Every structure is written in C-alpha cells, then in structure tokens.
Image: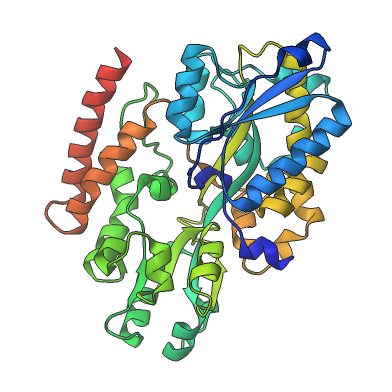
Length: 422
C-alpha cells in the first residue's frame, strides 16, 4: 500500500468545505461551436482531492471531447439546494448519503437505471452493496453512484498497550466481552488516561441501536428510539460511561476523539478511517493499530459514510452527464481518484487492484464495507439524530435513565416530524 494512502486518508463525505470557486456553464462561443459542456458541482476538499479531480476531468475531456465546468461550493448543502430550487444547479453533483432521500423525494435527481442497463460492462455488482444501496430509492431505482466511502473501526495506542502489558490481539471481537476488557485496561493505565474515547452521536451508534433488528425510524418516518430493544442495545454505552471506561472528547478537554486519542487522553477510540491522516499529520509520534468493531449477538456491524455522483433531473444533456458519471465511477476513473485523493474506492475490483486490504491499518475499514449500515434512512433521520444527541448526555451523566432520555428524545423528534410531514 502506498504510504500516501495512509498519509492523506480522508473521506470526501466529511471534508471541510472552505472556499467557493465560481464558474460558468459554458460560453456562447462554445455553444455555437457545438461543443458539449457538463457542469459538475463539488466541494473543495483536500488539496490532494482538488488536484486529482482536475486530473480526472482532464482525462475525461481528452477521452470524450466533452468539456467539464466545475462549480465548487462553500456551504455545500445549503447552496446546492438553493441552486436546485432556482434552476441553476450543476448537471452532475455530489450527494451525501443522508441527504439522498430528501432529494429523491423532491424529484430533483434523475433515475439512472436506464443509463446503467445500456452501459456495457459497468458492473454495479462490483460496488460494495451497502455503499451502492445508500443511493437506491424506496422505489428500487438508483439515483447515485458512490465515488468513495468510509467506515468505523477501533484504534489502539501501541505504546499504551505495551506499557500496560496488554496484547492488542486480546481486544474483544464480541461486545459482550468488552466491559471486562476495558476494566482490566483501565486498571493498568495512568489515572489520567481513559480506556476509550467515543462520540455520542447517532451517526456513530445507529448500527448498535438497530442491532436487535428494531429500526430507529418506523415505516412512517417517526422516531422509534424509545423501543425497549433499542434502549437495551444502547445501555452498555451508558454503563461503560458511568464506570469511567469510555468518555466523550468534551470530558477530556478536546472537541473530537481523534484529538483525545492523539493527545494521549485515551488508549482506544472508535473512529472512521479519516482519522488516519489526522493522526499521522498532527500526532506523528503516536503509533497505533486498528481493529474491526466487535460483533453484537454474533452479527458484524459498523457505519458507512459515502457520497455519490448524482445527475440533475433538469440537466439539458443527460447523455453527456451520464458519460461523466460513468467515467468518474468506472474502474479507471475510480482508481485514479482513490490513488490520488487517498480515499477508499467503492468498487471491490479497484480495492483489489490497489491491494488495499493487505494494509494492516486500512484492512478493518475495508472489511466493514461488506456489512456496514449506511448513514441514511429517510427524510426525517436528521431530526431524530438531533434529539438523540441532545438527550443522550443526560443519560450518560445519570441525570435520567436511558429510557427516560430516549422517551423524551422520541417525543421531541416526533413533534418536529409531525410538523415537517404535514
């Protein structure tokens, strides 16, 4: 595995959006000359992503004869939706998985099935299924093609484990054995170091909440967080927190688990592969390893975050727009993107060609793509997630039981959902 992949690994779906670059939709001279132009809506991303995207566009233009004009957004979600309403949105644009249901419902994304079926050797089975399915509508129609993804895994501090005399290979692979392991680790760590940092956020715990088979949203899009099975699945987090086995970054003086782990405040953390670059760039002396998150009741689980290329339903030249999407998410284009931007490719064949799963640090994240839960579930997910985030701290601190907290979260969320669905 090339060092650059580990050095700059970051998911496009969670990039910091910093600048706005304006561009046009092609000049009158171009139109007069009959030259095809496709506009592409993106966020800036890392310098590696920006550079690689420029190369991808140049390669595509050379191969297809179609010009591509970038429109780089600052406040991506807000500005994109404003452009969609105003009729000025690009022909092809990024869509984060959690936003897809809302855009599908508004009918602003073009169905892709006809284009996919007519494209020889495009091979949709080559995409990791949970990643691809994140952009499949309730109508079983495909509305986006994933460009990359990120999953969650366990990070551990090699020196802290060595000093504690604990073999990292004894980190439990099943959740029922995690509490005694964390207790043993805590007893052997310095008193100012917590066994593990964690983020109290539904985007990180959705797969845990749903591990019994109950879903956090019912069929009508209302919150189901107060279901007894969901509460039972989440209860270990509260128990571990109250025993000092896990702590939030805010408890440790940081804003993010990656900083808590990097600063030596936690011996472990559960984070996405985007933390690899952060640690290597900002905490180069911290040597770490990674593991898959433990199974729950014998079932593997994690979260996956992904971003698609989707087509504007109002695109004037949909055939040209599809050519761009096909190239960007085809095997050649995706390999260029994954290698240059240092992200995980959503095609299994590309991952195999790049030999990613042989990298010990990346392997747990690649493995998770086979069974992960996508951070996406209807148009009301964000409302439920906000109330979960608001109420869970009260349960962690013992101000109320988890049942009481999730009942209040459900009531508040459903009041807001009722208003939204009217």
